[in-house]
Structures are given as structure tokens and as C-alpha cells.
Figure 1 (spheres, rainbow, N blue to C red):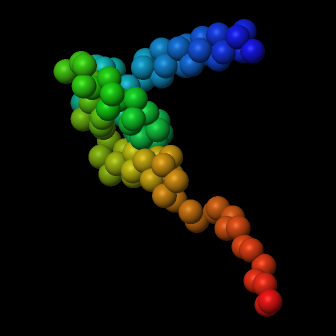
Figure 2: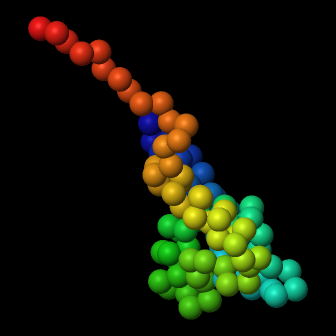
Length: 101
């Protein structure tokens, strides 16, 4: 049991370090090379991590300023909504049979 907890902690730490390499506001994108639709989706999924890191670092933002415009916004908001359970277009609803008792 202790070994599983250690391995899970190590995987969590590695995941956090890998995710922080793609956070918005890190200087990767410029006006000549803006972030597009798929980066908008990725940054939307990373929004909670970006928010926490942004508290401690002035350069890190929740949203990439150097982006392609509407398509980046669409991807970002789509990921925010679906990532937090708000998009229910394709989710299956549990239906309980009614008891006629």
C-alpha cells in the first residue's frame, strides 16, 4: 500500500511538471507565431493549474494574449465548459424507472 502511494505521488509530480511546460504566458507565443484553436483547448484544460501558478508568478497568465483570436477563444471556452462538466450534449442521463406503488 505504501509503495502505491509513493508511485502515485511521483506520477502526480511528473504530471504537474509536464503540464507547466505548456502554460499560457510563458513567452512561447508571439504576434508572429500566435496560439491557435488546439492550444486554446489545451490552455482551457490547464486553466486551474495556470490560475494557481499565476498567483506566484507574474509572467504566467490564465489566458494566452498572443493568440489567433476567435478560434483560440472558442477552443479555450469549449475546454473550460467541457472540462468542468458543463457540456452535457453527449452525456448519458441516468433514468430511474418510476415505481407505481
